[in-house]
Length: 304
Image (tube, rainbow, N blue to C red; front, side):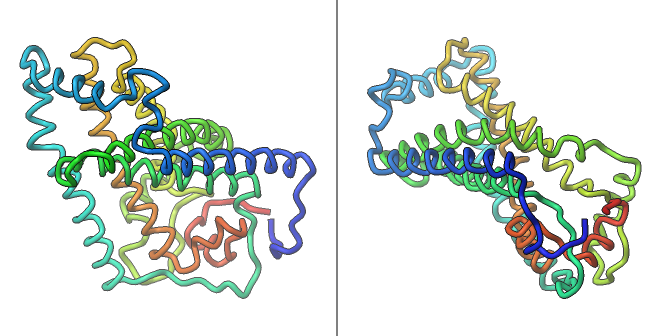
């Protein structure tokens, strides 16, 4: 669809759904802020699972028993995982910084026709999911490096916010899946996109093989939705929901490994949307992309 953003009119049903989602935003923000104010004991009255003593005993049992998976878990938690997480959050930004210095951002004209890419409902869902996911990443890292920060109330607060953010994102991920899944299945030209890394290693603006979403965006979608579902389930089990000790150990390992992958893609997504393509973030605000950008970066996309 070619049009100027001002000409775009939402349908009544879309406005109704969007209003409902806005209510969810207010509720989520209120819940998170309220937790921050009431922490570190905001959840201790809800169930014994949320007490600091419970977590201390649970982790003590996991790391103190060297039967079955205990030894593997303890070695990974104490000497491996934190190093990999540290590598992810330092090396990846350095690589992107070098890319920005050497190659730079791709720039497209915003003066010509624009193409509607994201309707209002999709944009609202994205902007609810984005902060909740970022909170999951930040608080998850705080938990991983909890001993470095001295533990205590700040880490318990991070844990509480992590749980709330997970609840919010678990709901939003369902909407994300339903909105975008039809455009996220692999296509033959996605293989070509991977081989040339989407053309981002070149300063030239040549058409790259991609539909409405490229191979990288598709991978990010499946990780964020399906992977997010795995993270939610393993997290549910980790926080003491009736599983045996070895199952908890296994799920903590899965949770951490998948977390590394998700953080890597999160950093990539942030770089691509804020730095690698000049003005790209604006499309998730207005819903429109410049026609030149679409013709170059989404050359297989058939728009009206």
